[in-house]
Amino acid sequence: MVQKYISEPFVEERTEQPYVGIPILAGLSDWEEVNGLVGELFDWLKVKGIKPAGAPFFRYWCMGDSEGKYKMEVGVPVKRMVTGDQRVMASYIPGGSYLSALHKGHPDNLDKSLDALEQWAVQEGLDIDKRWEGEDEIWNGRFEFYVSEPEIEVDLDNWAIEIAFLLMRDDAA
Image 1 (cartoon, rainbow, N blue to C red):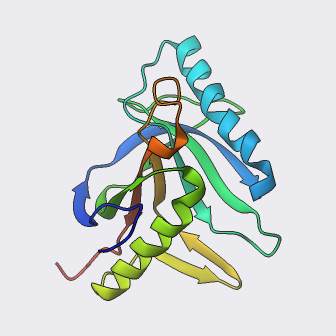
Image 2: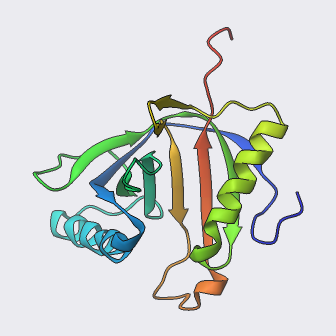
């Protein structure tokens, strides 16, 4: 794949992964609030004495409704299922086959890598686990894992973000 920001895509099998998250309905103008939820989750985990088991992520359920709002969760993987509260929910990243790639560069260019990965899936005949409900595109597993630590890598142009799309299950197997 010839694309400036994205690594060569690959398909991998992943096991179910517990996480804690905060759901939010947000438009692009709300992204500062969305990003702030990462710190809130890490603070919540620290208070509970729970160690993160991976990079923070955004999970997208609905890719922009009629008002341009994304139904999403900001999450952090944990080693085992925990109990949430009124603000923080506990859930699982579903196990299954994922189409993945690494976006390298500024998060503002992430849309180019996301589009390229979707196009690659179509070219390879892979079915992403998503559906349409009216005008809304609903995803069962669309993730952006923020593998660069902002405290260590302050230059956004050097960030690495793992993109992962859950693929449809082949029930015939």
